Length: 149
Image (cartoon, rainbow, N blue to C red; front, side, top):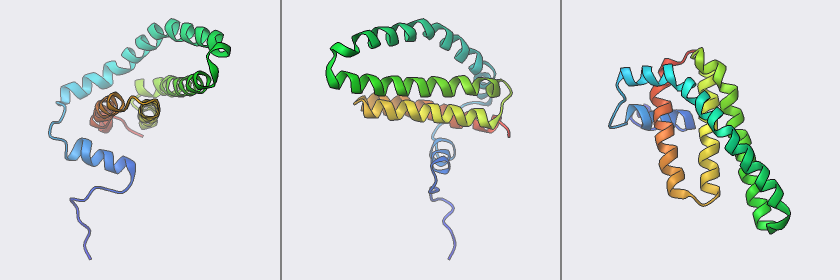
């Protein structure tokens, strides 16, 4: 029995690579991919620095309001904080490897994106979670070949 070479792989990475790179109707130009890989880590650093005061403010205000919000607020806030900490932690951990173009850093960014999509879906932002996740994963898988082990 021969394997169908046009069938999507069963694992998540292979499945996403199949549909977001091999079967994608549009490929990013090589110059765009190179630009994203070159400047993406710097853009990430700037965005993390710019978002730090806002994140600290939200965490502080949210913690102060936690006793007054009831059980639903506490559960939703805890999930949001957990997702935020995991997502930002993965991004920060990936930064040194992104500058060195290591595949391990790309993998951390992939997991960070998955955490963001999962949180969006769990919090009820289904359309924005799917659209944002699809765009983020498309870009990640388009630039994947530029990273090495």
